[in-house]
Image 1 (cartoon, rainbow, N blue to C red):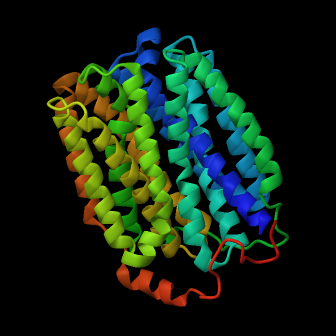
Image 2: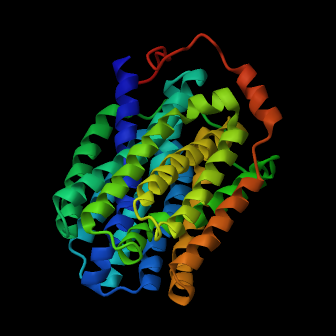
Length: 399
């Protein structure tokens, strides 16, 4: 029991490190970074996009090398690249050096999800996996909360904060080495081929994930700048709004339970529409700035639920390769974010933040056009064993 709980806890911590600190803390600290390094909105968007581009490269590497290196080595490599990237951000002196550091930190996110999905699939019985994957996915929210509290404690000191994040990363790296399972004696997943991408439902999954990723950069990359420039928020209020976003996202740990109750499709569509509403709400916050906290909370919970629904949707389509099933939608989200960050910056520079937010709300809403195949999800649901009720009741051949 302790080994399985330790695995989920360490995986939660890695997700908090790579996604919460390595990727999304950049948006929170961007106002001070832009001021110190004299970055335009377009330049800041391209730097943010570099993290998502690096993610795409890393996740392909994780697919190809995962079976040979094993979950432990890939997960530890993810933590190491996050730690090094965060340390390099702390000493960045120009837009170019910052871009390289942010890209290295972004590389870690691509290495994170596949080994964690494979470890959960190997160490937990099927009925326990949605709850475990939902809890691990909520680690992003925990990292966001940590970054928000840290900004409050180190107001304006973004270099000191990134140094602190790097220290946290070093500790997580050591923890992962002991918590993750060693390389299995037998390969437990099937081979990948181009035919995998022709399965029914894969096109809709990819399109929806890409559009969601594109639209989400409005908050992840530019949310703090909008609060500062358009709403006149001081650093303390921005950090508090970011913490609210993260705290609300912790509710996303229950995504697995929600999908078991209502199905992946309705949960997926509802979360996307809530995020679109949140982007529209941020444009109206100029009339009532305090509503920003509610808007950020809505976006936080909906984003984690949406990403969790994509995770479960992908695994349902690729039950023979859970690492690929999880990684494919996350890859498409990252491709969307890679395109969305510079696009939002360009629209902002040309037409203002309000028009950019409304345009990206429309993109987010369009992602809800696709939903999972209900026949597939119901068939998988009825096939699940019913003798497992908690993370403690798991196979004995792991950890």
